[in-house]
Length: 142
Image 1 (cartoon, helix red, strand yellow):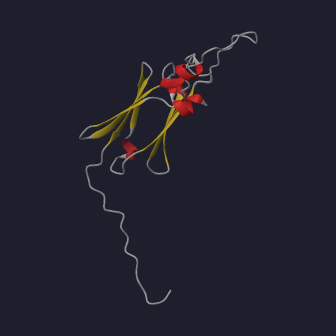
Image 2 (cartoon, helix red, strand yellow):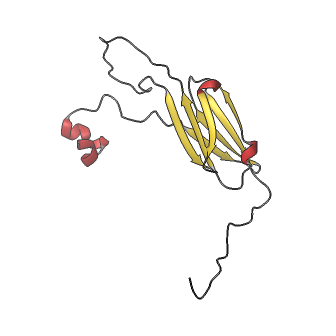
Image 3 (cartoon, rainbow, N blue to C red):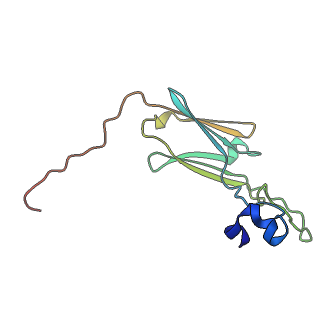
């Protein structure tokens, strides 16, 4: 409660201590998106996952969905107590959805994973697409 009212920097003054760890979500992979004259290059961090554990899909026309599912779980026994779980809680699932621009060649997207970094290359379409403007016929009666 004090974090939401006073913010993290003021917590020691009101509660007398700093938290043991910061809460954050490990379910979204980090992303770099670079645009070159010919393509969009997206780089995702997927530490510890092989290419068989990563899925790249195009959904709903122009949504790039990247997900990793390792299924590995670390089990230390029922007598063990977790104090900090910043690397995730053991299930290793990641997911990220990106809306791509319309001027790309969706049928030529390529993906490559190396050393825990997934690189997705999305080529641009050089031909300008006609605008999606449609004239509506106006009548005097419906």
